[in-house]
Amino acid sequence: SLGQLDTRYLNTFSPMNYGAVGNGIANDDTPVHAAFTAAAAAGGTVDLGHYTFLTSTPIPLANGISVKGAAARGGRSGWPGGLINSTSDIFSITGTIYEVNIDNCALMASAGHVFNVASGGEAEFWNLRGVQANQSSASYCIWYMPNGSMYNFKVDDQCSFGGSASTTYSPWYMVSPGSTIRGCSWRNFRFTASASATVPFFHLEGQSSGAYCTDNQFEQIIAETCPSGVIAAHGVSKF
Image 1 (cartoon, helix red, strand yellow):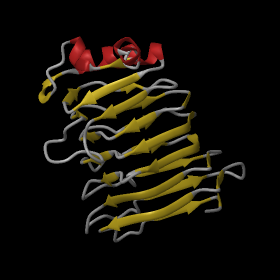
Image 2 (cartoon, rainbow, N blue to C red):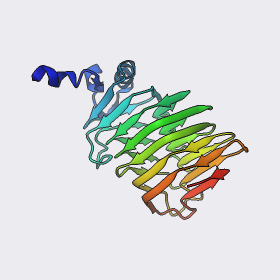
Image 3 (tube, rainbow, N blue to C red):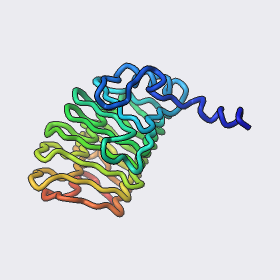
């Protein structure tokens, strides 16, 4: 019935319902945060639709939250169904954050990390599917985790990642004492560095005897223009 159909959307929140413009030019920081706050409280979904939202402060991610766009496999020209931030990180992760799903949207940062994991943070049971993420600054990363752990983190379904041509950090950066990277997979996705890149795309390193990098998978990936290599893994490693 119509009533049954409506209940499916009770826990879905759009920034447009909080006054966003969604053209990627107007600053939609306040309505975007309002949608994420509501979704976090309900364990629900932030629906970006076909809109592009410009933000200016980091969005804290919460347990059980989902983010989805309407972009086909991570977006096309014009970044539909996405978030842009040109002044700070897009997302901030503090503590242990689990069961996060991000699907079919575009994430572009130019003056901060796309995902910034605070010292000691953990990401568990995450899924990134059909996500296009780009970091155009030489000083920042797509995923930055200087001291934390990752368990059962899945990147799949034609994600596409891109880094700055002159980056000094690996776009996917996890270097820390005692960190654990276990049971994670990067499958069926594409990433691009540049002809002048001096660091590998992935840098996974535990800097103590208690650090583990084990039971992880890289499968069906396309690495474009990565002259300094694709993966640098150190510590106790098993792929």
